Amino acid sequence: MEWIIGMQRAIDYIESHITDTIDYEIVAAQSFSSSYHFQRVFSILCGFTVGEYIRNRRLSLAGVELATTNTKVIEVALKYGYESPDSFAKAFQKFHGILPSQAHNNGSNLKSFSRLALNISLEGGSIMNYRIAEKEELTIVGHKKKCLGSPTNTEITYKETKDHWLSTRSYQQHMKKLRTGAPIWYDIYSDFTDGGFTHMIGIESDCIPDHNDLEIIKIPKHEYAIFETKRCESPDDEWAPLMKKIISEWMYNTNYVLSIIPK
Image 1 (cartoon, rainbow, N blue to C red):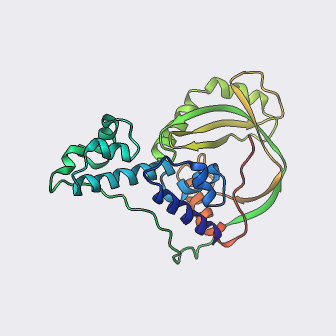
Image 2: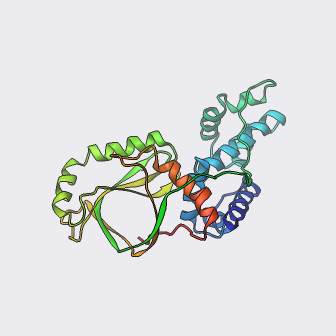
Image 3: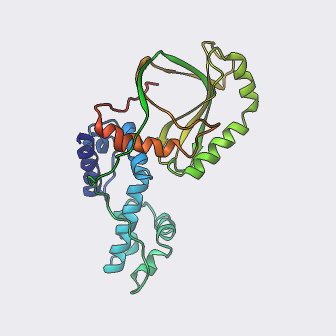
């Protein structure tokens, strides 16, 4: 219940400061969490990022203002955070399908993006298989790529990830020689922002990589909740819905929280 209240507080803060410069750290503080944690949970639950929500809400409100008042386009653009009429016009046309100046005309079709409101509804009632286990520290050696595009867009995520795998065959052959653990390849996603995310292809290894383009991350020894998808080569279509179900249903009924792995 606390995290639901926190999420609603954060959304209310965004709405009350929709025409201001919004600091994600302050937004996250309303939900009693870190900026990274809040943005990750928000995107999993809502299907779009915090930045996309703010941008769509501003463009939606800008459309209403232009359609119902005689306010100049430049004034509306500045009010909703755009530094120039050109950047505002491009964003407005992409969202509404018409130019800002056309919104002044009676009868122009506009799009509305409503504010979020969290409601408690009867969901769940399904069986989720999991186990709680303490895992030893895991050292992953791998290759990272900064992927562009919305991290909530599954098509972009799949394409960027696939391109990363196809373009790093030589690194993968080198990593095989460093592997000291089970013959498993890891896909690790991190640093989710409005502009993209970081994808890492990795293997378990205790060796120090002798290549400048390979990096090490350590997943600390801890107690973890472990959920599994069905056995398949790559569960691309399953992990995102599973994450949403874990946060919206399983975590809601337990005292567990998401942890952040220190860099």
